[in-house]
Length: 240
Ligand SMILES: NC(=O)c1ccc[n+]([C@@H]2O[C@H](COP(=O)([O-])OP(=O)(O)OC[C@H]3O[C@@H](n4cnc5c(N)ncnc54)[C@H](O)[C@@H]3O)[C@@H](O)[C@H]2O)c1
Image: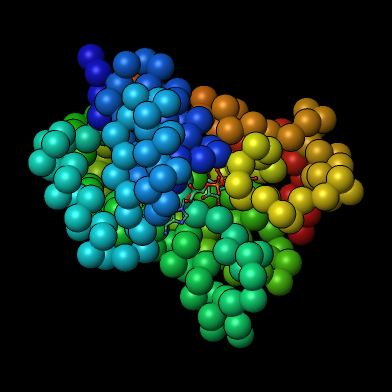
């Protein structure tokens, strides 16, 4: 039976691959993102519904919640994928501005929709957060890894709270994934080679690698898998 799948940041990169994976099954897929043009284009190509919103803004999250409740009544899967290391793009100012920007981009974009949509989840529903291997490493001067790490205990708490409803909550932590906007303008050949050399698979990850893991976590067969963090990183060493 077709399910209703909600993917944040579903217009590009990993989120788009997740949306495509479920759409291929005939599921009703809703993608949320900030840029209406990018989102509408992707939705048209995937046969998905586009709901433009900045998910770090409580009022916009509430608007999306109302649209989901109105159009679908309930949802089956929430993939909190929106995020990125916004410190990399432009000079945001001092420490407070940089940490606040990554808090908004990676914590609020996941926590606000989860809190707003959790009562819309059907029994046997699924929540999957997209974190990063950066959450397990030295922060290397940015707040990105610490912000992603914030999601882990939050996910464990939700797993305990929602388990009695038959809902699982897990985290997927990707390593270096190509063909996303994440590293746009910031990747060079030397860095790419270094990241690939850290893997056992000898290659970069793809959005499809992550999508297949999210898809499996959302499958009935993964019903006893909850409160887990799965790294999709080709075995990349931790670089502490
Ligand atoms: N690409 C990688 O190597 C990599 C590695 C580890 C983790 N991740 C994580 O994977 C997730 C997906 O990133 P990606 O690599 O596909 O890059 P991406 O930039 O292509 O996708 C991120 C998406 O999130 C959306 N988004 C960002 N802030 C938002 C907001 N406030 N409200 C609504 N939407 C917002 C963007 O518009 C974009 O569509 C992110 O959480 C990222 O941190 C990526």
